[in-house]
Length: 467
Ligand code: HEC
Ligand code: HEC
Ligand code: HEC
Ligand code: HEC
Ligand code: HEC
Image (cartoon, rainbow, N blue to C red; front, side, top):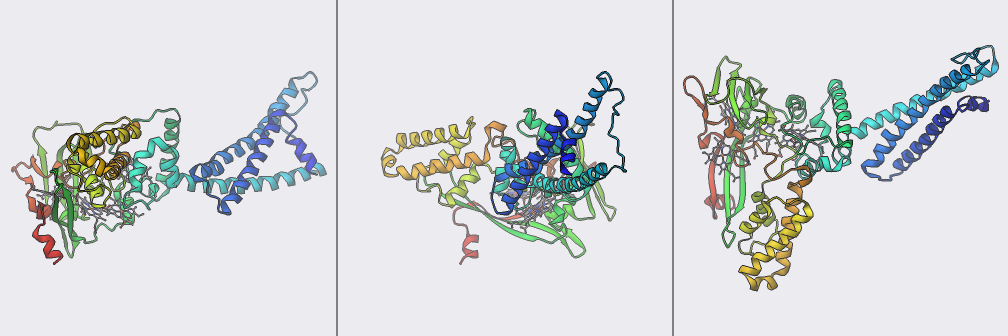
């Protein structure tokens, strides 16, 4: 019974190849699937193989079988005397053989549908996985993936921010994704990947799935430890009371006032959103204002409605500036504070453009050793290990923030929270933008925070908090 079916799908070379491909890929899919169920960890590539590549080969094989059959019949018709061969097979249901053939065919088709549906489901899961987005096309996404792994969103999948729920964005992301695969395969992608993402899904539909925009945060105490660039690397403290605010009772205030459902802020800016030309603000209670930069171009630029991402533009890919990375490494004991001028020298050495991570590590070790041998020769032997670990820590800092292959340098992706790492809030808050009545968006130092201490040694606030 099977012999008849089998011979019908292997009668010509193309159908034979198709059958071979389908069977071989099916066997592999089943083996890999069973291995995965038994707990074998194969990394991102195994999922791609099992649920994307092999099923594609399987389907190709299945398609080759009927195509081969039609081509074969067509070639038979060209042979003298073969004109009577029908182009498509003839099914005579009175024939027992045909009926058996049909039963096997329908059975096989049902099994195929189950396999393809299962593989599609798992394939989508693979494509939405962090491994697929972040690790599979390694060099391209290495900067974003590395920063993501170190962020507070490292357990939120790429898809939850970049695709979000719903079928329309799902389809759109798959179309974009197909192009991205081509771009990666043929090396057509831009370096660095440009920011901001102009077609990022509105935060309302992504961030707000997890963060309630009207949640009242209130004031938030933020204490930052810095080290001075003097010989002793003096510890300095900055303490701010950030007025994050939000909606409390009837009205909202503070920083999260911008995302009150009644508040609508639109702005026109250049492509990078660093240069803001015009801001329109309107409130549900009828209040409205337009702030303009008189020197900005009258037309052109991009309009955008402000949402979470205009301040939190690096919720997950937050590359840190060199100075704060060194501060953190000193605090964590990775860099020994007793090394003279380690803050100043470390900063000088890593705030540079090395062409690869390896080159950076070598240069950092050489420069640091050189500095101490010239200025503190006695330390070079006494603290050889400490200097070596400081160099390693500086190399690590460089390697998780700078990606020469992707042209990602310290300044490539500016962060908009605050006003230290880029103009941030000051893109709007300041004297440049004015209403007709010459009113500005306030830049007073106590609008957004109370400064309890600014780069002070042992400020009172610390003793008050920790008596
Ligand atoms: C918490 C939300 C969130 C998660 C999770 C997330 N991203 Fe992003 N990503 C963003 C936002 C917001 C931007 C856009 C910043 C902008 O437009 O200014 C962005 C930008 C990007 C960019 C453009 C380059 C850049 O840095 O601006 C790439 C590429 C990217 N993300 C890849 C990924 C990958 C890969 C993952 C998973 C490993 C991921 N993202 C996870 C929010 C997220
Ligand atoms: C799938 C859920 C989820 C989504 C989507 C999500 N977040 Fe978060 N977010 C979290 C969780 C969970 C935390 C807390 C992490 C922790 O405490 O370590 C967090 C923390 C934060 C924090 C505070 C920590 C920090 O890094 O400063 C900010 C700000 C934030 N998210 C902004 C955003 C923005 C902006 C978006 C949209 C681009 C977003 N989140 C999307 C789950 C999510
Ligand atoms: C006007 C700029 C701005 C906008 C718009 C904005 N935020 Fe914030 N948000 C801030 C600042 C500033 C902080 C405090 C940052 C810090 O802790 O260093 C903050 C803090 C947070 C935190 C941490 C709160 C905590 O308890 O520690 C979360 C979560 C957050 N924002 C989510 C959001 C979400 C979601 C949206 C969009 C609905 C949003 N933010 C819109 C500026 C903004
Ligand atoms: C796109 C422009 C824009 C950006 C960027 C922006 N703001 Fe604003 N902000 C405004 C406007 C407009 C107002 C209302 C000014 C008015 O009514 O006079 C405002 C008002 C405020 C207020 C007063 C809210 C209240 O209680 O009434 C605070 C606080 C504030 N912003 C903080 C921030 C912080 C912090 C950032 C950066 C993380 C920031 N803003 C970034 C446009 C902006
Ligand atoms: C529009 C809101 C806004 C205004 C106006 C503003 N700041 Fe800030 N500032 C912030 C935010 C938000 C942060 C927190 C950044 C962060 O959490 O990384 C900050 C951080 C700081 C820090 C700490 C930097 C660090 O990392 O140690 C200092 C110091 C500071 N501001 C000083 C000032 C001074 C001085 C003024 C007046 C000229 C001012 N700010 C006006 C929003 C503002």
